[in-house]
Each structure stands twice: as structure tokens, then as C-alpha cells.
Length: 418
Ligand SMILES: *[C@@H]1O[C@H](CO)[C@@H](O)[C@H](O)[C@H]1NC(C)=O
Ligand SMILES: *[C@@H]1O[C@H](CO)[C@@H](O)[C@H](O)[C@H]1NC(C)=O
Image (cartoon, rainbow, N blue to C red; front, side, top):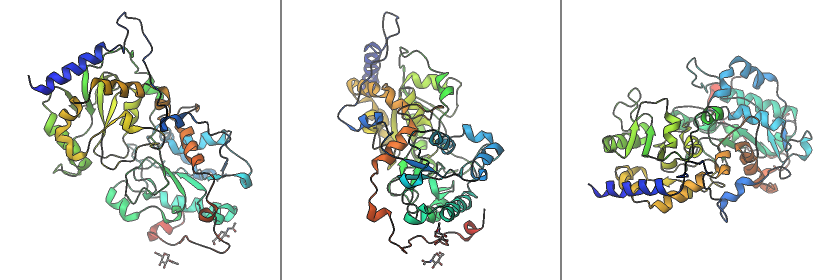
């Protein structure tokens, strides 16, 4: 027996007998742990009373009608833009008096143009966004006062407000120039990337809660899988050499561990996917970098410790969720050592991470439930906005006559009316 096999059997055995489940067959609540004294506490903050949001009323062609045309957008990974609108309309933080608003919200569904197979086509998004901004800046005085610095926009597309799904093109485009001063709420998060600007609020992708709940199994179920992953390792159509897709991290996992009994990894997506995550100790999520993956959300919901192999990633609500304590961060270059890294984590550390993951506030923060619930992702977004208050008057408000935005910057096609 190789040493790591022995270490890990020890780990598995200790997890099985460690009292997570009741040996007497009675379902006991899973032990959980609060993260006291660290940032985790702010997950339970109540944003009500800490900020006021004015929701612009736009013609229905910017939102309602777009959704009527394609209701699939409601189940899409990018559905946060729609649900956030719905949430704000009935939220107690909403104000009907723009003069007392701290933040302004523009409900334009820029990610709801889907192909037959459900992939979003963001080519018209910049024109639509520009059109919406032109409208609010001509009808209300608030945009011109700050050129957007007290406005926030939900841009859940792959590369946020760069509005392209190919990274090279997204980088070439950059963030839509008119959004330069605005606060962006987005799923895309990578440090030092042109599509993530300072001050953005990173959110989880929308994941259908009911579907996940339908697959919950008893929390007593032993975690008999050591490492679990389902997904592509190579992208043959776009990257036949296998070096670029997910920056090679997925290919490396496959080549190094495909025959390793501790690794339950495959491209096949089984019908027991959600149940398997509840039987696993570690889930590779995200693996290499993929902006649209709901895996991290699933890992948290199902209590599978996320092994984060994505250099420079910015995780959702990272100023409120202590990801370092919950997950395991592995550098992409260390993928070949993944087995040793994971098997040398002590059972105590694994158990602590599992207890933190079992904390309901952690799961709640990953979800956009209908209707909203305290502590959910909607509330975390508001908390994030509230923490930016009060606005720095010198930075946010322009002096009379001062202009910083260039309304004709960016690709010429984006200037066409929408
Ligand atoms: C805001 O500024 C733009 C461009 O400078 C101008 O066309 C528009 O009329 C202004 N909006 C208001 C409400 O004054
Ligand atoms: C605004 O952007 C356009 C297009 O890139 C450029 O030609 C123009 O010089 C810019 N205007 C200013 C004032 O920087």
C-alpha cells in the first residue's frame, strides 16, 4: 500500500465515525459552526435601513418584453439580472423618491438574448445598455450628477460588462466605456483582468434551488467518495491540443489522476450528480477557470469541500465569506501534487471545513430564492452596496460642468441605436 492510500483510508474512516451521523439510525442535525470574530458574521447583516435604492422605470422593451419573448431566461445561469429587478421592486430598501436614494438601479436585461440551444448572445448588449443609459441620463438628472458613480448594474454575463464570451474578444472590448464609473454586480471574477474593475460586487451564478433541494439525501450519508468531479477535461472543438482550455488544469487532473482510485472523475454527467456531491469529501470547483460554472454553488449547498484550482479567481461575496477557511486553494501548477495535498489535510481540518459549510447562512448566501429570504444572495448584494456608503462626495459627485465619460468611445458598431 502506498503511503497516501493509507493516509486517506484513515481520513475516510475518521470521517465516517466522527459523529456526523447518528450511529443509532436517528437523524441528527448536522453539527454546524459559526464563523465568529471573522468576516463570516456579516452574512447575517440586515441591509434594511442601511441604504435606499431608486429603481428607474424603463419602457418594457428593456425588460418585461424581453423576458416574454424568451422565458427560458428565468432558468438561465444568468437569471440574476431578472430576479434582482423583481426583488428590488418589492424590497423595503426601495425608495420612490430619487432625491433620497443612495443607489440607482437600471433594469435592463442585457443577457436574455439566447440561441436555440440556450447560449446567450451578447452582441446587442452594449447597444441596449447604451440606449438605457442615454434614456436615464436625458430623463432624470441623477446620471449626469455622477456619470454613474452612484448607479449599479447587474451584468452576469461570462465576462461581465465586456459583453463577449470569448476571452480574447472580451479583453479587446474592455468594459463598456459608459459603465466606467458605475458599480458592477457580476459573476466574472479574476484579479488584474480588464473585465473586472475595482469595487465590483462578485456574485454566484444563479442555480435553480428547487432542483437541488429535490436531490437532498440524508445528512447522515457517509462521505465515501474522496474527490469528485464531473465535467470536460478537454475542449476538442476549440482547443484540440488541450493546453489552453481551463488553462490546462483540467487536462492535468485527467492525465495525473484518471486511474487513481481516490479520484471519482469523469466527463459523464450521471443522474446521481447531486447525490454524489453529498457523498464526496472534496469537489473540484472551480477547476481551471470557467466563469459560468455553478459548481461552487453546488459544492456549498451539498457540503462538499470546494477545492479551488483557479489562480487569481475572485470568489462571490469574498468580503463576507471566508473562502480560505471553507475551501482548499491549490495553485494550478500544483495539480500534479493534488493527491498528496488533499490526503495530507488532517481530519480535524476537514471536519471544521465541513461544519462551516453546514452553516445555513453560507448556503443561503449562494442562492436567489423566490421569494427572497433574509441572508440570501439578494441581501448580500445589498449589504455589499451598503458597505460602500456613505459615498465619497469628492469622488462620486462631479463639479458643475465637469465631464469624464466619452460617449463615443468604444467599437463604432456599439454606437448604433438599439
Ligand atoms: C445630461 O447630459 C447630457 C450630455 O451632456 C445632456 O444631453 C442631457 O440633456 C443631460 N441630462 C439632463 C437631464 O439634463
Ligand atoms: C472619444 O472617443 C473617440 C473614439 O475613440 C475619440 O475619437 C475621441 O477623441 C474621444 N474624445 C475625447 C474627448 O477623448
